[in-house]
Image (tube, rainbow, N blue to C red):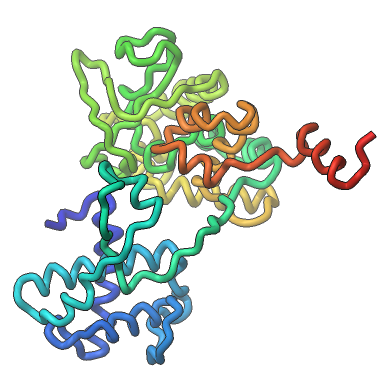
Length: 354
């Protein structure tokens, strides 16, 4: 059941987009065919070997990218499998409910992968390549440039906290003051160093929510559980600068960390979209190339940790709170092209080694 929370909003957006296209094409669940669904995927950006008619996502909208196409294919398939399972259009259900031989990755992910005979296949999903795109990092020297051009202590704190951790923007803007354990040996007993607990909450006033949902609880006013991120001395300094100046001037009762500093909603929780806009404008003022996105900080932090630890995947996984070592290895596991070992290997191949 849809309740408008978390990633359900994303899935609902893709499904509503398809239903609007279906209305334009005068189709229903009973009359739609697999070919019609493939035409929709072509209209939103997928490469299909058939004429798909008039493009659906016209300017200023852009065609879906690879990840968006995968999400759209999953939403459309799930919707029709559910509807057809209620008795409508059994032919479409048979066309969608197909299986294929498992790959090595499928077997590795399964508990009893060695006995797998087949896995579900989505005929609407575009073909997946084996090459992963390199993550979009921050431009070189972005942090000092951004800290220089931002206008408030709150914004400096945001830049510092994103730079020194792998926090996602939803987790950062969803922080409450009780989530911060910025001293040694905090009462939660889960981390001896200063840290924060990123807890997934549905009811935040600013609608910000952490992506990961590990269990958390509050006992005697002390938060435990959630995602734990260690904090740096620079993060603590920027926090106290913000709290003793801008935050102290506004009386708030919601208990959230980041607040609006001006306008009619002064003192209300700051939203994730507002934080993204601040970073985008700061990047333009600093003259940095491209668009500064919060997730680029996460990529840059993980890559820097991996380089500093000598490509230790487990250190990078724990420091970045990644779900698996495999992800770190596939996305960030690259050699340092300026390391003495790398240069020596190249010179040996080139025949220049003394």
